[in-house]
Image: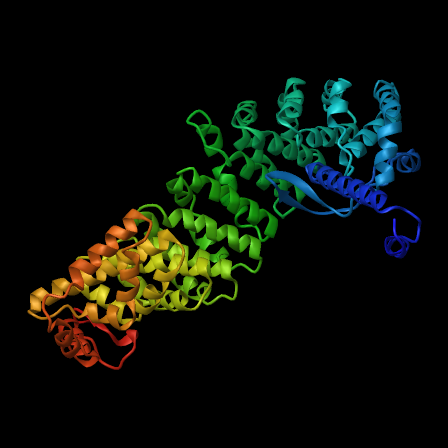
Length: 573
């Protein structure tokens, strides 16, 4: 090592460690950080929640001094499809090492405590088991299963002591957030029949909360487990019983709403339908609660129903007005899920779309299209694009309230994802108005050509194809009007003035066959020069004033007026 390298080594490392040693230390630290991060993600599937009411026993001082310190958990959130706590910080590495080396003998001591005849000792042992399962970075589920104590936990569910029942239910709900094999161990121990029996007992809300939590974690794991949950009891009747006993928002109602959303999540089979449909009245009542978490979970449940092609069942629940109101909810999470529900409904048939329109959604969309949040504007445009794919009356309605004009403005001045949805708004509206040319001309006059042409330069084949199809439909309308009135196709002038011909020409060499074919078809059909004087004749015939006079003569448009003063077939819109 020369003097320069030695000086650098001393400067970089005042603790006399060599460079390769420092590198190895950094590597070990990075590996340990990744390991802790992985354990933290896995542990987030644990379900820890501090009990607001301590046990009123004489031994409570011993009880609280014997349990390990656990991190505080705030509001319950949905994480990765599993009900999970919002835990604060990860357990220190020293605690993990200490657990791995010294906690195994303690587990056997806890098992001895479970088999004791003393209720106090049993409760302390159950609490310690629960704390092990609730620790942020410690995952002892498999070890507990290997010790064959799950049947013992299930037996405690039938105890006469309510505290023992609550601790056992809490432990089983934590275990049920594990892997499929671990959940199967809970089912094989006979927990499901006992869960359903205890749900009918309204005397302890904590017990109901833990059981609902466990049932949700079991049902969300696989369709097979969901079938077992549904077939073990009348879920609709049990949920209604809980709802009748709680007229105000509370933890058990929040957990119940999440459990129902978990049950609705996967594809609903014909055999499961009677049990699942029995819970619909509960959903219809829960959506009336002024609680963000309940509303969030209920909207997800309704959204899953829509995803599973049960749009008509959602409508029959009578929740459509509530969903439209929730589209402007103050809580962004509730608002987003409500938008997702409405997206499912408007993607149905015309009559289903009309139900949402009758609930006043068009007025709500006007406010959402000017939102400062891009995701909200994108979802609003998605909903509008499906309404624009409806019948002529629905399209005429969205033109009348000015939604097409707002969508065209977003097409020119918004982010790409929103622009992409606005393209479908214009495309669907024009495509559906093929036998009502005055509506298409109304859309064109609101300035859709320039934004459409601009989007031909985007690197997205789907958008390019949709834009070309829209331009082709507009040019086809112009050709039809030109034949009827014995004149030139004035829509070609609009495309030319906005630079559309050059961009469509470039697309004739596009790598996508469909785009290349439609681009060639547009150029050959509408822009082929028939003679040498065609271009000059085009420039002379298609001046802007001539175009406006033609449109106003055909469709009774009032020049120099906004869309609000346009008349279609003698009717002002």
